[in-house]
Image (cartoon, rainbow, N blue to C red; front, side, top):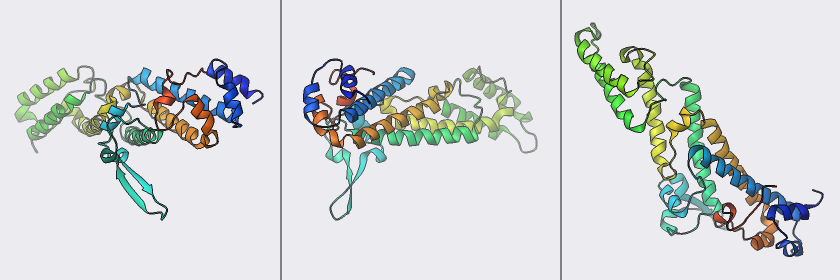
Length: 279
């Protein structure tokens, strides 16, 4: 980097604090790279919000709700004797405590793991979902009931013949629920496919409920073909944060001057606290 001070001035938007930053003796080049990563974090966060209507940089209140997820709630600390102590954040954290970078990384890590699990099942078991265009959480139990009813009406030797009236009534109700998904034929013909899909949708619904605090709708994400992009952007945000934390140690004074505090994610993501230009 030929002139880190000039680039740093562009990122910060003016000459404020440049003399103080230079006086610390800390690397302006390394500081510039970290601030660029912060800008990338902000862009990634905005992309997720724009495309899926969720803010992955959670507020203290939202983080408190996410502590119902054990992988986020429990953290491990080690002492000088290398003994590991497991701590519950629900017991030690106040509701209005700021969300730390470590807290946010735990959220991103668990969300990525969950998205990866759904992605794996989708790619390996469900290459072409039949009902996804109209699937909603409230329809899952209704379809499961229709499947069970159809199974009871299917005689071992006679099939559906003796119960054809009831079968057609169920199929009519099914068609009303999924008018754009019945091209493959009546329910009795696609029953094995529907039964398998419902098991997948149940997993998606469970994940929606798990992440209700951030408002994820997996059905919408999958409908729009965005699961891979969402997963990759969550991963990208986590990688950027890890890189920032890893590289910030020699820059303690500079980051303090700029107001960046790793115990409060708002100092990284709120432009009203730290304004940074995309350079």
